[in-house]
Length: 430
Image (cartoon, rainbow, N blue to C red; front, top):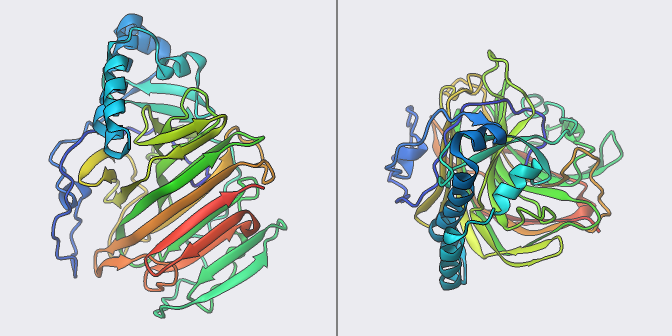
């Protein structure tokens, strides 16, 4: 995930269920009105809004410890049947296991994590005040304490370059770290200083920010994708970001193969600044309690994901942000956050998107790029951005009409390949 201490306590909505998510046919050309993700993907269920977050002590006092334990097991079983079974190669086995989980009166991993006060290596600050058997539940976590990058996104030269080919720049930033940069603008300069020196290796792909964009979407393809924590515990992120001059929000996946309680797949996560006019804590992350992509092999600090493709979408309206995930025609996450007054899209608004992949130490320490940890084979396929004036545009490596530049930080610890419509990234701390 984009490592910036930018999260506030925001009032969000979350929906995790199986509904028809077939894309509608929209005439995008010169479409000056906002098309919501709900309309675009025919999501016919209203999202749950204005969820409060409370402490686990308050939660148990409200619902009762026995009801919480049984409800968590029911929610986990429902997630296994309705979400994980979509991608699992052992669907029959998973269904049978879900029946055993549902009947159990023993505390599950979520309950143990909440007692411990830690999830994905991060401190738990609160739990959404939903019924215990509701699989839409989210956790409010303390975000990583990483030095934020300079605001290179909304500065420098943003002149359009229409060529389909570009240049690769190799260099060393002001901190002495190597980078590669892919860009189409021959006048681009200064962006080598965007490095986050404590955050290890990562890929950031930036769109232009003055082209009236309001939505970005991509398919995240997991094919023989492996995650491993070596001598250091790492959180691994794959996500889409929206940024204005006032606010940022990230949305995507998080995993930590070294977290003993919750190393069972990829979880939904988002972080961002809430309403700048409100007093929100800027150091919070929100994460689903159950995974959306299952594992097929696990070991000590290791997991291999099921082969699957997840469509991820992020849309910005007028202070409202929509988050969307689907596997095939099944929606596995849909949420709406209404407290982003600093994120506004429009023909004349300054708003850009970013696609990112990173592998970061989970407790605010400097990431050890010799730890042996790795995140292998993450493919971002058919990435697009959508503009009010020009409709859908490819968001490829050298597509200068939408893409500003791509930076690979510490490329000696990465492999990166691309086609006209996809990129494949591996981060390897050897």
